[in-house]
Length: 157
Ligand SMILES: Cc1cc2nc3c(=O)[nH]c(=O)nc-3n(C[C@H](O)[C@H](O)[C@H](O)COP(=O)(O)O)c2cc1C
Image (cartoon, rainbow, N blue to C red; front, side, top):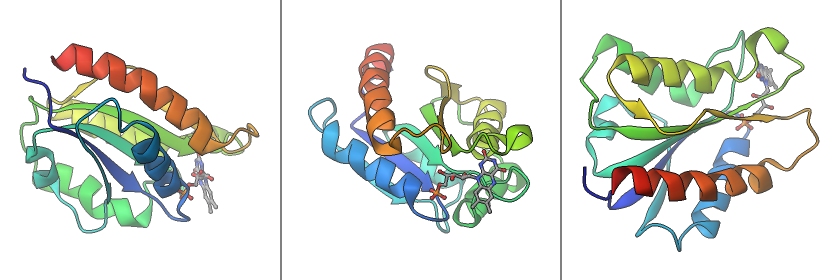
């Protein structure tokens, strides 16, 4: 495995929190990796995983534990047009709210399950942010991302 040329953060969001989180990571972690790109999931399909990149799925949860609307096409295409993703290394930031205990952070967990099924390898644990915890998602997710990136770059060197 060679060092990836960039970190690609794929954003699933309804009310932009996940996008703000991704932008905060982009601003904070530029010293750790040659490039960071934030991309909304709108209209993407599984070919997005063909790039020479480390991936972070950064998504919230809606409905009955579903992925946000802008993530639906990508999420469903991973099942309808499956491809082997054995070279993909990724992390997950799952935004949710423990006020929904049955489906807490399921949007991120769903992506994790589907990517693992296709052979992709998650680095580290899924990071969950609880909107009811009273913490700033940008702050705690950025701190996680710095640790995760350091570890992920070691693991892919
Ligand atoms: C209508 C609605 C439904 C939600 N459903 C869930 C849910 O089932 N599980 C969960 O963990 N969080 C749920 N949430 C919480 C959001 O995922 C959380 O607030 C997240 O930070 C929003 O991020 P976003 O602004 O990027 O969409 C829900 C929020 C709303 C407004």
